[in-house]
Image 1 (cartoon, one colour):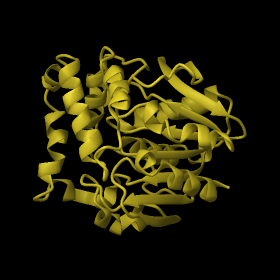
Image 2 (cartoon, rainbow, N blue to C red):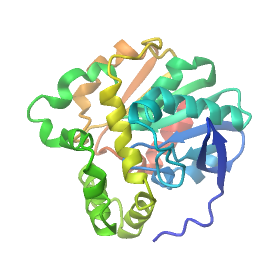
Image 3 (spheres, rainbow, N blue to C red):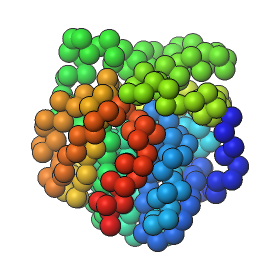
Image 4 (tube, one colour):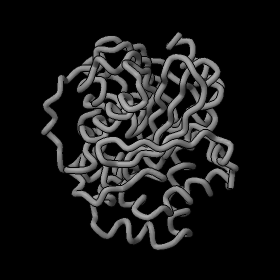
Length: 288
């Protein structure tokens, strides 16, 4: 596995849950929010370059990797609102009044919810291929279900027993998404995939990630926060992402009232890992 011992690992208790995070650098605070199947390590090509200009915080969200995984009903303990509240509490715990947020996948969902729910805490947003309301029902319009099937699978109460049966089953499942969703299928070497396997082999980590999908399905239509994101937002969207297609960016203006969209040619779902130098420079240019 890759050596992660040299990173600055920290813990903080927020909302009754102990969160693990990596923190590097100094200056303006910048939060990097992972998605699924992710954890702090998916930013391993970004944290240190960005830390030359920012105080970078990359947490494991509740239910993931090395953070606590409360045994709560998904709709109670793993909703978008709960995740946004955890982020707000972590921002306060670390003594920040306002932060920049970079996020993708589920992290982009939680970041949007934070920006709408607690707008005073979020300065600028950078989102990669973000799920957002304007995608609508296209997740499940043919032939997309051949890609979106896992969302339904994650609803099943026995799903984590199958995927989490042993390290081999975890590796098979996680490797599929890391490589299939990437434009370059070899972008995640074996030693880095081993880090993901270790993270998802933590007790409760498979269930924690799946609970986020369960909460999304169970809380649909219950969002009472303001519907639009008013913060200045940069959306980077890869043109080779099979699960979040570039053409789905057509309705961004309905949610983001002050956004810039950039098409990232040759990037898939994990652009922060696929083209880190370009992504890091886009982040720096936009935030500074």
